[in-house]
Amino acid sequence: MSITVLLVDDHPVVRSGLRAVLSAHPSLTIVAEAATGEEALSLAQHLAPAVVLCDLRLGDGIDGIETTKRLRELDDAPIVLMLTTFDRDAEVIGAIEAGAAGYLLKDAEPESIAEAIERAARGEIVLSPEHATRVLHGVRNPPPKLTEREIDVLALLATGATNREIAKALFVTEATVKSHLSHLFTRLQVDTRSRAVHEARERGFID
Image 1: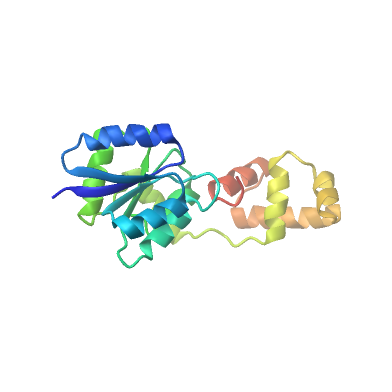
Image 2: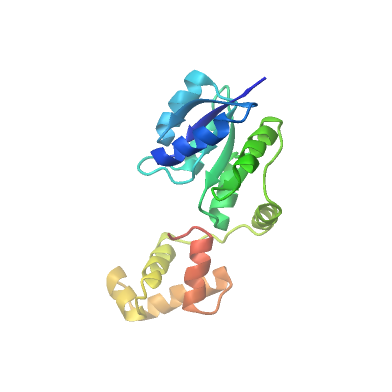
């Protein structure tokens, strides 16, 4: 019996390429395409696909992780596989926590994507050894809780702003900025401004 698949990606060329590649696989049937998370939810409710192949970033509207969460909450919930170019820990762990059955990168071979859909449809979790290790690490070492103000400091830090410039932008004293940085270094387990920015991006606190 053929596995019904819904493709979700905001780029028409990507959807067209995936349709062409996956339609050639005898065990798969592409039932529809969606450009947004909202459209994917509507189509999934009407068509009840077995598997949804979903991008992480979907332009305006809800993203792939939120789309996955809502798809998994449907009465006839489809299996969701993420297919994306983004490979940060925050996205990988976020997708799995939202209910995705796997996480694939768009540079994967077409046959590997088709095989992943088949495996997911059989109830398997589809993760590369590297992604599996990172998810396990993320579960064992959950990200620190940061305040909104600390995230504001990180965002400004990422622009290369000095302590004085951060203080001016946030209407606080330089001493307060230094205090925030001290807390951030401890919580992110880093000792330099550049490492703080790197860790903040890897953990999804800032873009």
